Image (cartoon, rainbow, N blue to C red; front, side, top):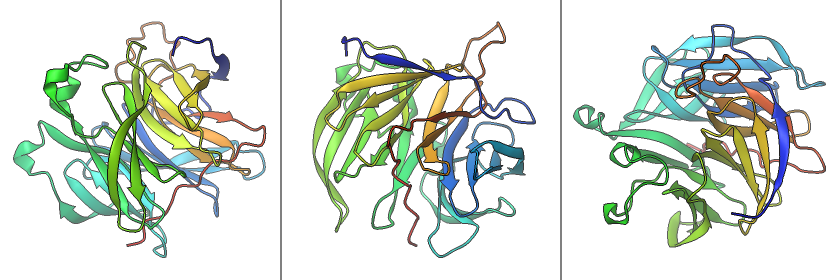
Length: 300
């Protein structure tokens, strides 16, 4: 992690939310057939779903995003295969279907009892190549230690983040580490956890992640404004730095599927200068023949 890596300026906010910066922007997903970007403001009161049309020729925003008020905080969502205008999502307490037209939640399964939600909540997830929805729970007790400060005596924290990778593994983030697992796609079992990259001692908290078609990892690092890029064996290749420290999660999209759209938060930036553009959407065209891995659709 100490080697000098290339730093690229990602620039200022690409889209500024019309009703002000988001408290915690999360879960961007892009739909190519109508060139729309979908994301949530998970911690706004009440929470919101945003849907923005993007010019299919220029990848520029078209007008203002449509904003829907949600009845509970949604932290990740994916499109449903064969069910138009509907998402599978994780809300704070479980799994639900969410209607794109109304934002209404249809609870599929409540997993975390209401009396335990002060210490537990769902945070992130992904859909694998078989259409299964994986979701991860934040360990709020572990979070109070701060990034990189979790003592070994704590044991294994609950999964901070899972992402499906083209090489057939899953990656989990906790203790500022990326772990890889062998993943049996047919039966959905995981095994052989190993450290893929150790980011201990660096500033910030690893957050949302995507991969490109070559298996390179693009990791948002909350608190630094960086998307760190790693090759498939976790060699740190470069950093893309944006004008907002609290970036949260990237998604691939755009007409060539080579553009990163990145959500961010206003909360926790500590900015008193007005220069931090957290709480808006950032965009960066990676180009150079890079193609993003399109997120899978839920098969249920």
